[in-house]
Picture (cartoon, rainbow, N blue to C red):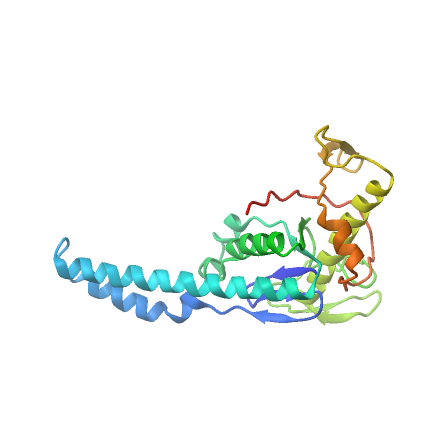
Length: 250
């Protein structure tokens, strides 16, 4: 299953499901502003000032707990539906400095990926990050590069094959295809008897980039494939995609 994250929908899956963002901070922003205003009117260091600061901290804690609870439940629901989950390798620090920084921080994409990776590890589900470049610009049906889209353009349309659908869903399908291509390459090398990710640190040469990359190995890959619980779109183009090894800890 491929997952694409965004502001309008927290998660779009390759199964064409859109999961809206709950916006816990935005919904309670008015109450938080009121408590902060009351705290600013108190004499600093006084007993009433400490009580007001405690109320502000408790509201922040409530927002964080609600967001975390939602992420854990969503992660378990996604793991119930797929044996492999693929996401983009994104720089969330750069996202948080953009025009929609408040909504990005409220969505908590980095925290969601961290929780999802941990839940996948506990549930014996493969979690893999793939190259995030041009996922919303490539057609999932024919692999045509359709060009850069404005943020307000929410519909994907391919001029070559005339495929039309949601932009976020199309990006999630591209992510799923790249993840399948990466997993298929790893399983192929396992079948050839190569020692992938062994203590000897096997490497492969990426001709398209001219650099050495360590071959990742995850024992959950063959188990997920043998279960037959993966239902992803076909690979339209199997280009070489970098595989970022995830360091999971219990």
